[in-house]
Image (tube, helix red, strand yellow):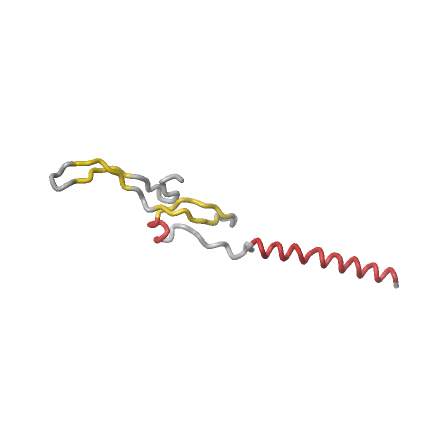
Length: 98
C-alpha cells in the first residue's frame, strides 16, 4: 500500500524531534491513511488510499450511484427473464394445439 493520499497527495514528511537539550533527531511523520471503496462516474467500485482529512471534508464519493443496481438485483432480474420467455413459448404451443 502506498503511503500517499490519492486525493490531495499528502505523504510522509521529515523533520527534527527536538529534545530538552535541543538536540535534533531526524524523524518522519506519516499521514493517517485509510483504504476505502469509492465509485467512479460509471459506478464501478475501486479501492484507493485516502487520508482522513479528505474523508472528513467530503472530497471522496463513497456512495454507490442509485441508478446502478447491486449484483443480487441483477441476478434476480436475469433469473426472471427466461421464465417469461418459457411462458410465451408455452402459450404459443397451446395456441397451436387448439
